[in-house]
Image (spheres, rainbow, N blue to C red):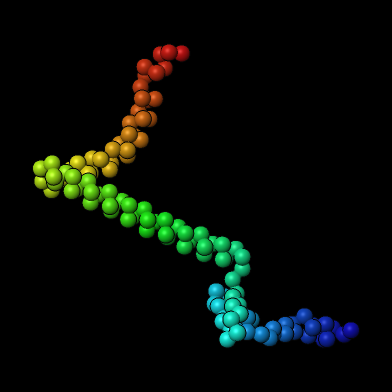
Length: 118
């Protein structure tokens, strides 16, 4: 083998695959008239997409439950005679109560009294 033919063999283009799947972009689906479905996704891509759809559905359900809870709570507080400013304050304090507890729970370690027990 000569040097020229070896170099030409290195830079030779790979033959193109024939078939409809090789022509489709990644993620597309090909439906045949006889009912066969071909897609170009790998199993990992398909699993990732399925997980994304499940997460979106869970987020929608969570948003729906949160909206329902807030609307029922507002109705109950209005029945008890609170006005909208008081209701907003009550809901704000109720929803941010856990966030304040997280910061307060670490403050008892900072006191010097906790070091006296050693």
